[in-house]
Each structure stands twice: as structure tokens, then as C-alpha cells.
Length: 77
Image (cartoon, rainbow, N blue to C red):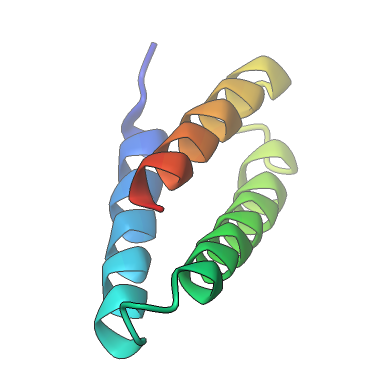
């Protein structure tokens, strides 16, 4: 199974989170977690529109990528 789409999405997600952490107060953990979850939601919605509507990946593979990204978001909190 080719996971290049996931790897690109993961790299972009991590980049966004690093930028968020640079620009916000590091002591405001609740705000950072909320923003990470919002970023994840936006990435998933964009990814859903881009990939599922154009049949780049299957629904099952999309669900797997979604779970992987959720797990990554928890680690980045």
C-alpha cells in the first residue's frame, strides 16, 4: 500500500503544529490543544474533499489515515 499521501499530509500537519507552538504562549496548553484539534479537523476536511471526491484513495484507506492523524495529534499535544 502506497502511503505517500499520508506522509505528505503528516509532514504538513507537523509543520503547522510547530508554527503554532512557536507563535503562542507555551504555558497555555488548553489553547494549544484546541488549536491542534482545529488544525486536524481542517486537514481531514480538506483531505476528504481532495481524495475521496477524486477517488484517489478508498474510504477504508481514508479512515486509516484519519486514525493515524488522530494518534499523531495526541502525541503532539
